[in-house]
Image 1 (tube, rainbow, N blue to C red):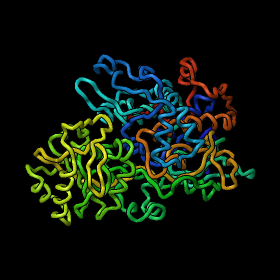
Image 2 (image 1 turned 180 degrees about the vertical axis):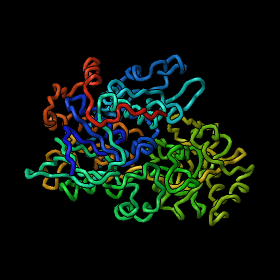
Image 3 (image 1 turned 120 degrees about the vertical axis):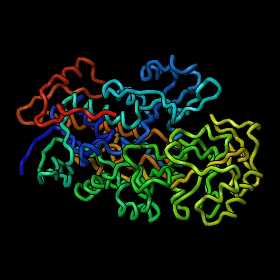
Image 4 (image 1 turned 30 degrees about the vertical axis):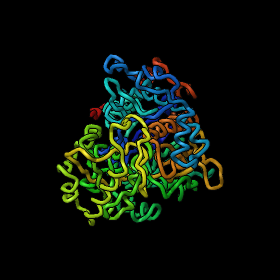
Length: 541
């Protein structure tokens, strides 16, 4: 077997993995290798399918200004629609949606580093950013009201985020290999992870490394693992993300290196998506299968009944659990019903489907593929009898307290009557994005073994990390978490793996601080590792 040696080997090529690779270079690792199982045209993991929105803490809305040049000129009273989102707010939201089950150490690391991480992504990762208008902004008069903590997203969403990370990694001399599936972690006589076995188009190769960072995602695309750990309903879910996340990294870490399973292995992020799409969301349409405006209407199942409180909270705090709720319904399918009072509030992604349309609710329900249409009409009529008029204080920009009265399952906000035709119905099902179960890491992103000790030479980041999410998930947290722990993993790995390449002297490590422009220029001008992809044409959105 041919053998090569690197300071740091990163497995995976999504947001977290590439953040780790860039961080490793920033912090002194000279030879950094990224191994991507997917071919080049399918590269980037789940990041490509994401909306690119970034949840992070800030005390004053104007603190985010450097991330959004020109926003104040483009949007009238831009900062007036933004509320502060403190670390206490962020951690409180994380605690609330996970029922207090989030890992106490990792959640604090995430929250406390969230703002610095996003600025690092922008300044060092060179990720262009923009206001998240279509995802989290609601226009009220001439002003846009922003969901708390969710103002900024990567330009061109996940597609742009992925492209920016690849461009930065390649510019800094990170070597990237595609169609390269890691099959085995190499472990030396001191029980340290010291490299990997890789299967590519030419065979199996041994690659030595000073440290290995696993950033290759969860097991959401693996039907056997989904069924085993989450259940048969989720086993049959559509996959809203990469088909390459088969749980390889988790399996290797646990069975070969003794990593400790951690977090909610029975939990997942399962977004309501169009039921009209195939088993895997089309790559070219990225996140536009999402159907998250249910709070402005009602959802009914094939039995013609409501099954969730559509107005429990803003969609950014309920969609990850409501997608799974749809999967538990007969046929794993539901309809979202809206009238003409709220049709204009539906996020633009609804435009990728053709809804059912009718002038009356009776005619709309008659078109639906459901088992009990009579019950569906009763459900909608009962809802209308218990709901309020829009003139009674309906406010789509915040929880407005407009609630039904007298239903077995109340709708507690935005509960206005479906009374103005034409009426619209969109199909939805649950699309699994990522799994909550993973492996345990510490605050340095070191993987913890079942003996409660760090496994030498092994780190993890991104969706492989268990413990942050239980049952539910605050939107925009995943990308920031991935970049935060990716950055930490790269820093830790560089301190472990630097100077291990034969005949190479690493530059001084830069722990805990952002690389300055002169230092970045030095890295860009440094000799490239043999066989890297720097001279390939960078993929752009």
